[in-house]
Image (cartoon, rainbow, N blue to C red; front, top):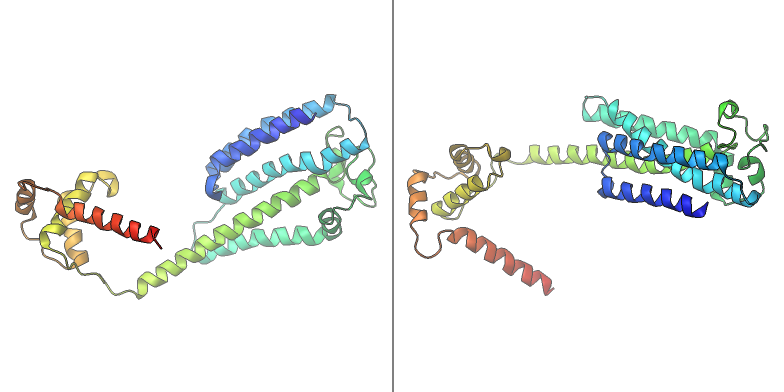
Length: 282
């Protein structure tokens, strides 16, 4: 069993690392991961249907650790997919309230399962045979009607509860990140509002500004390359309080340079490299 289980866990971890790098989980990525993990989870179910555990300890280990780990990923990505799918298109306050409401749901789940939380987190084992062995449910401990319609060969009293705990641990981090994003945008907007209009003035030469403008135009880095040279030069003039005059004629002059046609850009590169070298010595 160990080889089969490790193979499934390895595939899931690898795919999560590849798809959800930098903890950036969109609804599309969550849906992709759901579709990736679900077939593996069903393969695990079929395997356990046919597998005979060596002893009670192996069975407890599977339903206490292995199955909840995999199931928690399904619950986690399903919660994210549902959250983002139903996310309101309101103000930042509306978004904050929306994410905080889910945090309240997590808190309520924790409070309603406080005894079990303490048992599991403390790594206790004295009730494991009731919690994690099939067919050994103690209804005083597992007063959960949902257990009656579970797959009896692939479920115990509390494996789903553990999976939900693990999923909610991950989801709490996700919600904190979303709330921080909303708050960060608020701070940025407040900072921008406090700045004076066009705070920067170009103090280099006019020809340098024109060289920069044409470089931006040639690179196509504004509006996916759809910004024309007039729009770019107008923006530079307005933003940096400079009159570029007949910038096309100046551009012709730049093209006719004999030594370095892009002397300003070359100087920018050299200045940046010098700064990097100085910082490396610190």
